[in-house]
Image (cartoon, rainbow, N blue to C red; front, side):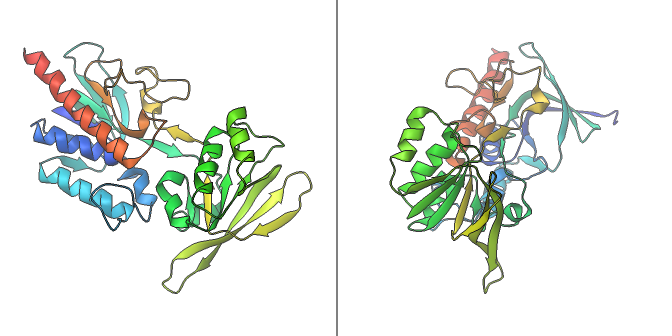
Length: 322
């Protein structure tokens, strides 16, 4: 462990749209932010081949390219972006207190403010074919990617409210939607179940699980989804379904384990922020993006909350000087 302690005004943990937007605003406020990207620099959008719904990109943009653009803009205002993983936090409970951060198990940082933008990770089934075809037809966000399957046949995996919402949303865009439900009933609320059952182009297969995502390599070398193989978990019978998109809707897990016991969380472990602000229960600690938003989970809403977090941090520091 290093004996040298670095003292900074603003530490940003995480590097998705929320983190980079917070960095842009914090840097312009002369907070001299330092960002640690985490293991997946750029966050979930780096697994998205095409982002079509973020303002300013009329022709759409590759998710990784968009994150590179945001990173370049943050660095233009002298944000220091570092690759590293925050491994421990000791957050002060006092107004004006100093937050102690450990990076990569050794580097010590003392920060006057901390902006948490660690995001949330979509839950997947763990199939090799599912992982291989992410970005090639496998998605965990219907709102993000549904447009690309307009008029096509797709699969939705899941049985809860999220799956039902995704299926009914996609049914307005796609030709046919098939839901795979591994039990003999859905877990979704009765209202959502009724909506699914009353939508003509949604078909529900009960006691059915995804066995494999089927892909095919195109002339340009990329592999895309051409179908799925499903299995009835009662009869063990398998059959294939021709689809071009597979949407996994079995939930998200916020990346908040680092803050357990220090920051207030809801029952699903999302960080709780106060009112319409980014303020957590501890002074000088702010949260933005998917780590505190289980409702919208969009790049543009994450970016907006990143702006809020930076403004809240700047105002907090200013209040200490009053």
